[in-house]
Length: 285
Image 1 (tube, rainbow, N blue to C red):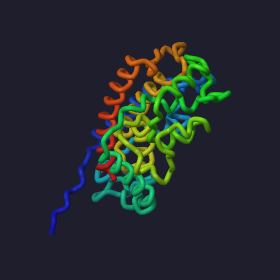
Image 2 (spheres, rainbow, N blue to C red; image 1 turned 60 degrees about the vertical axis):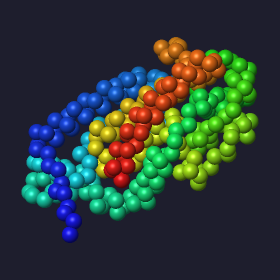
Image 3 (cartoon, rainbow, N blue to C red; image 1 turned 45 degrees about the vertical axis):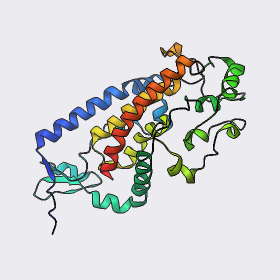
Image 4 (cartoon, rainbow, N blue to C red; image 1 turned 180 degrees about the horizontal axis):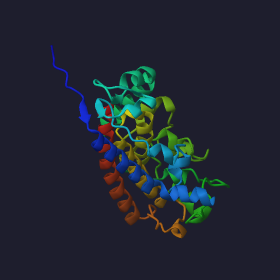
């Protein structure tokens, strides 16, 4: 019979130090959001990850070791959901069997889209025009931020380009006039077929998928996915039609040759980072 590897074991001092470092890192990442909420303020870029995905900063503070890790001197963990006693007294570990049993369809859906995206070549010719398509011929735009080129200039950029969006959750916000300009009409049921690793939103969604996998995901991987999503969103908005210089963000002018080159350079870097996070999530599922 094939041998089964024993679960890894973390001494109390080891895992509690990892838990402490995780909480401190999460607090640094979410400090701006928490301060703005206390003051009743908003930020057009940084707040997106909290409003669009609807996950509170407190979620990021929760550290899990991942599956098949025994925590020593961890009886207090047994009061938390999705934990079970370890192989010896006063130990605990993630109850991955119960989690997989209850969340099986969700885990399978995550696995399918991660694997399909990982096995597909990246496309780098969209130039972030999804945000422009969301403002195309629109009297009201999605963000309370001035348009860098005005309404007519924004519309002209859309009309001068071939829309190649591959992400259904970006496409669903296209204005009615922009929808037929896209190379393909994207549908939810086709997402596994159309998702590709060069897409900025596919990279951002790795954070959402990490959250959905709950305690199976080590805390460090969750925060890496969040950091990637935050960095991607900044590029996403810098390349958008909105003027964010009042928030200290210079535009990536994708309507120019130089801006397109800058966008693709960043896009390829994020695709590489996303590939690494995606493979780590695939290892989890």
